[in-house]
Structure formats: C-alpha cells, structure tokens
Amino acid sequence: MDWSEATTLDGWFLEKEVPLPERRLRGFAEVQVIAAGFALRAEVPAAEATAFLRTLSLPGTRSNARTTR
Image (cartoon, rainbow, N blue to C red):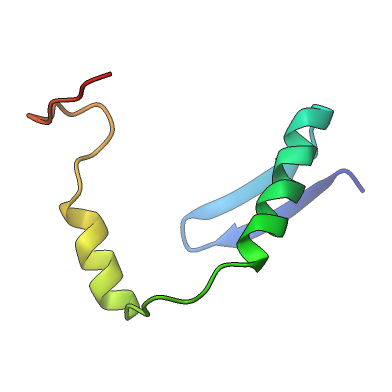
C-alpha cells in the first residue's frame, strides 16, 4: 500500500507515499547515526515546552532580530 488514511478530531486525512531523492534518504540515516551519540541535557515538561514554543514568532511575521554573515 502506498498510502494511509487517518481520522482525527480535525478531520480525515490521506497521506500518499512519494519518491524521495537518495541524498534525502542518506540525510535521514546520517541524522539517526549522529543523534545516537547525543547525551540528554535536560527534560522539559510538555506544558512548559508548549508555552515556550508559543512565545516564538510565527513564520512570516517580522522580527527585530538582526543577523550578520
């Protein structure tokens, strides 16, 4: 099967399998290898993480942040 269906409180969804370039698949594998060596530094409860993420700017909104290259 090259698709899957899901029904949630938000509605019905159909996800179709799409071909990925080999370089993207290699990237996914490399991330897994690198992440395996990570050490846990902190744990944040879900409610606190959600509250923090909501304080971040939404995509498309202007920020006063300045960057340099």
